[in-house]
Image (tube, rainbow over all chains, first blue to last red; front, side, top):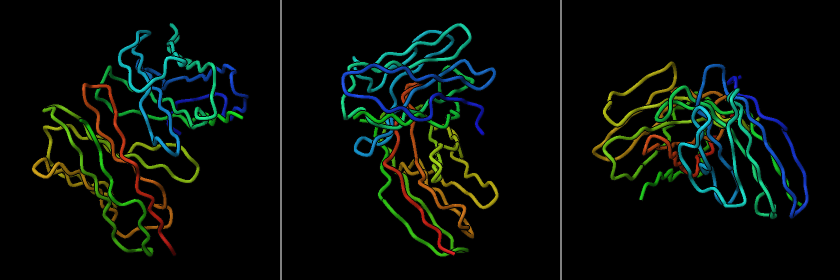
Amino acid sequence: DSGVTQTPKHLITATGQRVTLRCSPRSGDLSVYWYQQSLDQGLQFLIQYYNGEERAKGNILERFSAQQFPDLHSELNLSSLELGDSALYFCASSGTSGGGEQYFGPGTRLTVT
Amino acid sequence: AQKVTQAQTEISVVEKEDVTLDCVYETRDTTYYLFWYKQPPSGELVFLIRRNSFDEQNEISGRYSWNFQKSTSSFNFTITASQVVDSAVYFCAQMYNNNDMRFGAGTRLTVKP
């Protein structure tokens, strides 16, 4: 158990809808990273927050957004969902602002029908 | 461009065999970090090791060992005396700019009893 929690475990929704994925980092970790794992794209870095502020952006679509709250939990919002957004979404946390080891949560499997 | 290549898509061995998973990375940066993660059938990503670009010392942890060679841009992972529980997908990753993590496509290791 990495200490990172993600909810929900599974999510099934329809195209065009909006969903919110939630992540709680390990106790004491200030950084939260979001990743997408799909069969065709592999594991891709989406975005990082550090202590409430956006720190880095990867291959995140404009339809996707994230935020980190004062209690350090983070939410990833996915809107105008398309079939291609079906994937496993991981959150990871780290004790540093960059370069440190990241501990991953169990993931949220999103299915868009 | 930053890129991580895991040329072996799938490897199958018999228990107690040694196996090496290859990882080659491309970077123009002088400061970067290299990682290995394990993804067992249950789906979570388990952190195995982190290496910074200034530390070329090889590392051994139980049956696991890592060989980092900057001259060949490689960071290979060896499992000695493999066990069925080692069956998983293994990902090599490189972090640059302190935040952007690029993963290889993964190597699926199957250890047969």
